[in-house]
Length: 187
Ligand code: 2AM
Image (tube, rainbow, N blue to C red; front, side, top):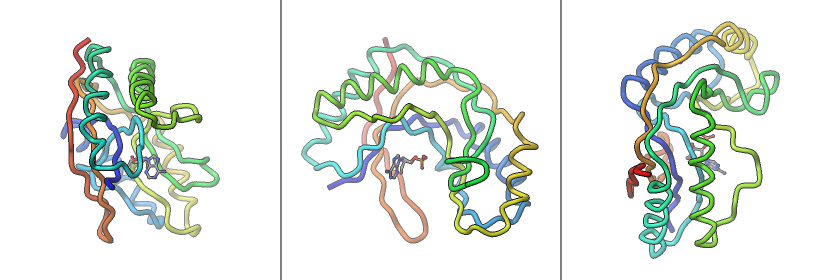
């Protein structure tokens, strides 16, 4: 079985901007496992464990999703926490512009994968970039304040021109993501 998910990659320049943003949040000294900047991505669908035999069919299905849509531009921005700023477990940056198209792309991905028997996500799509996961309950006030103060943060605009099927290996030092297949947007 291969643990997989479908994501949109970010250009290195955007990841650097996010790294700079995370540095500001790290000053709050909260107990957070921060995501390494070059691993920050936008997840469209988490598939979980998939049999290796199914990977070619999943890849072909994602190609069809890519063929349904032309490339578009997204700006990431705004920030917050899931499930809420008071009860922080995941620190995220949101989507400032291009959300509707991302949502449309996410629906294409759901559609083609449901044809292969994958369960459709029932929860509404909350496009986000996970920056960190809160480890402890202590000393979160300064991080909460920093998130509120940094609400106006935004990245440069970037092009979404492909979706990527990733393999995720969970390791003690952090997950390793390996691209298995890239599907261009070419609608
Ligand atoms: P996240 O960014 O909100 O944490 C790889 O784990 C990617 O799949 C992450 O981006 C993660 O989203 C996403 N994902 C969605 N559901 C997940 C789940 N149940 N377990 C692990 N990762 C999940």
